[in-house]
Amino acid sequence: MKKGLLIVVSGPSGVGKSTVREEYMKDASLNLTYSISMTTRKPRNGEQDGVDYFFVTKKRFKEAVKNGELLEHATFVNNYYGTPKAYVDKLREEGKNVILEIEIDGAMQVMEKCPDCLSIFIVPPSMEALEARIRGRKSEAEDVIQERLEKARKEMTFVDRYKYTVVNHDIKQAADEIASIIKDHMKDA
Ligand code: 5GP
Image (tube, rainbow, N blue to C red; front, side, top):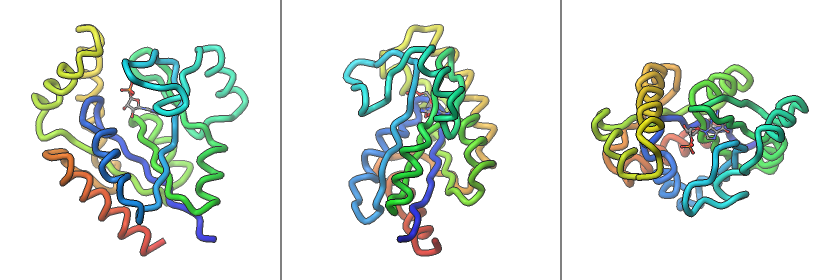
């Protein structure tokens, strides 16, 4: 069986990565599975353990790093995030195309380890639009919002390290663009 693609999707916090993902994942012909990350961040309202993330303690996370359980890992605004490796490998062996929705430090690690991965960076139409989205989420305190915006400005400078850039003017249009990039690569793979 043909091994599945490894697809890295990044973009600043608040750009709408997960909303766009929910849209393109509706297309069954893309044969996608989302890789659930491990994090030490506390769940937001409505987030479920084992669905949105595996929510763990810092002790458990450090153990996972030490045991080599993670494909990549990074610190983002005082919390740890990482991709469980065994699950990604298993899905790809089964022929599934796997989506990693991760920040830039982790994405750079993946690009180095798997140079043939498909990388996509989602950008907001403007920084003002991004700030409005983060504030609209009403889930973070002002100091965390400021840190996430500062991080977003830094992340935007990494855009040309990715194979593709998609502007999220509109959820459906961004999702369609990503779907067509993936379809092109499925043909080539
Ligand atoms: P949030 O706290 O908003 O869910 O995520 C913060 C940032 O961490 C986002 O950019 C998200 O894509 C990224 N992220 C989520 N999971 C992982 C992961 O496993 N590894 C890395 N490096 N970043 C992740």
